[in-house]
Amino acid sequence: MKKRDYILTATLIILSAYTTIAQSVGSDWGDKKDLLVVNRDRSNHWGQLRLQTSNRGVTLSNYKDRFAVQFVTSNDYKNFGTERFTVRNSGNVGLNGVTNPLGELQFKNTINNRKLVLWHSSNNNAHQFYGLGINSNTLRYQSEANHVFYSTINSSSSRENLRINKDGKVGLGVSNPEQNLHVKDNALISNTFLGKVGDSNSWAGLAHKDQVGTDTYAMITQNNGKHTLINKKNTGDGYIGFRVGNANKMVIDNSGRVGIGTHEPKGELHLSKSTKNRKIVLYEASNNDHNFYGFGVNSATLRYQSGQNHVFYSYVSPTSSKEVFRINKNGTVKIGNTNLAPDTVDTSLLSVSGGLRTNKVVLNIGTFPDYVFDKNYDLMPLEKVAEYINENKHLPNIPSEKEIVASGLDMNMITTKLVEKVEELTLYTIDQEDKIKAQNKLIESLVKRLERLENKEQK
Image (cartoon, rainbow, N blue to C red; front, side):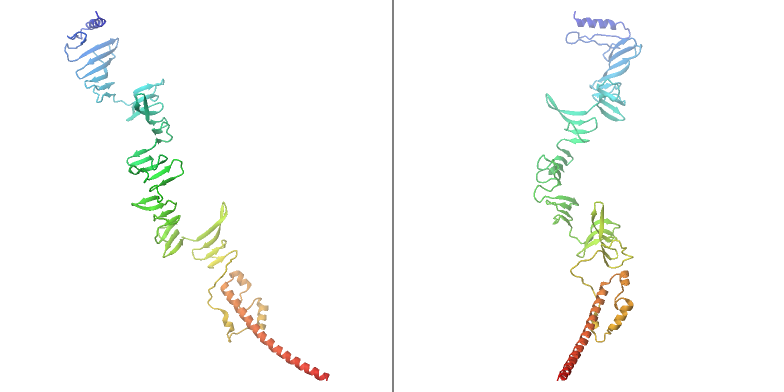
């Protein structure tokens, strides 16, 4: 008798000891159809096989729609136990009480970090293992180290495609990601191409996927870090363009010139050809063309606009500068005269401190003292001039030292008065010249008379 036949015979003898379970052997018994059928109701509907040890048992149940493994924790031999493993007629497998698995493998609906354990360390906890879990409605891909996704190269090797390191850094084609997301070569996000673009692999940047080539590309940078640009094309007329409303609002051309409002800058900075009070705004107190600090062009005039005063500074030291020129809000000009309060102490239109050097000064004068040469001019006799000087210590019609120190020197007035005095001196000189000539004639006449008298006496 075959060894298999001995085992079957022993099993039938054991089963026959239980009067509550009927058994039968399939009719086709032989090498091709060795069957052991255990039927509860002596039918072909379903059958069970119970393996019992004390109050622990396992029941194998073959229902009409599924096969189940049940675990028994009772001495009640009619208790089939709790179903833990189920195989449906469709082949779907359910675990831990899932009797109607909806997929080929379905776990019990429980929240557990450890749903599927592929490998576990010696520490029995829900974090130090490799596998899958469910936590707070989240599918957990658990690893003690890194998560790495591979694809097949051939029968003897695989390639790493995606890595999530333990520190959270993600690498696409990169086994040692240096940033939160590190992509090898390039990436295509919708219609945006990120990575190697332009002439060669040495250029990387951002472009539309249809515009990656040697003629037209968007923002690029060279791998040596020396060049970064947004370029129209790799030709001599390339430029960086900032477009709004499908028009260039600012450009940087191939020579480095910047155009604002023009795409053909002629200087290093070229603004649009428009007449505006506000061309360059450095600071704006309120939104209008007058209360701001900056520059503008209005009626062919270059405007230096200030809400208060215009002040020019020069370098003194790395920590200080010096005011050298000021145009106050009221129109007064101060040159090097920064210690004076411009609107109170000194109201002159122009105040200069430290000297003024120029090739020519032109003063606007309303009158000039040619009236001195008028026949009706009352020329003060020199005796009166001497008396006035002795009494007042300055010339007539000339301000005193006290007045000049207090009010400053009025160049217009003093120039006129000095010319007046020069013309008066000229008249005094002419008068003295006439008197000298008359005296000379008189002297000559007296000399001749004296000579005649001397000659008579000698005879």
